[in-house]
Image 1 (tube, rainbow, N blue to C red):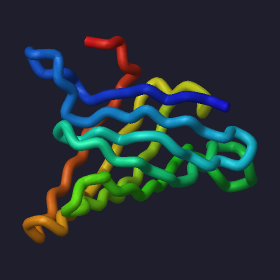
Image 2: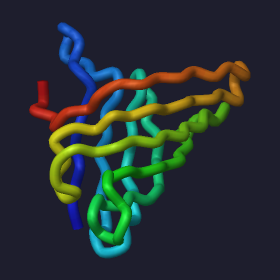
Image 3: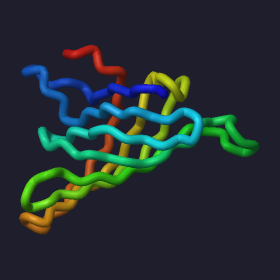
Image 4: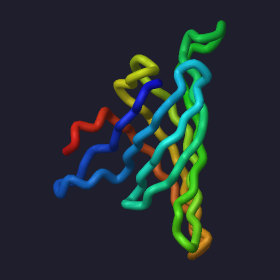
Length: 119
């Protein structure tokens, strides 16, 4: 089992706009944990595929889905690619979309996540 704790560049106040804390089953690629986006915590599940684990797989990539626990549920979906070892990526390029049942708005974000040093 690997743990990925990574975040986007921190603001001056130490806050991280997008942070992940995933626990991954390295034998089958399943992912679970949390993705925090703009202060909102989403419980996620998903799957990742390691580069080189099967012929023709030249990049490490993942997809995930999650919800928050508020009364007006927000949803999040994200895909990403990783650089570095699967058990401990050096960098993740992430694209996500959040939609809200509270106000009907959608919000997209893309950026780079790096190992979290705790800011």
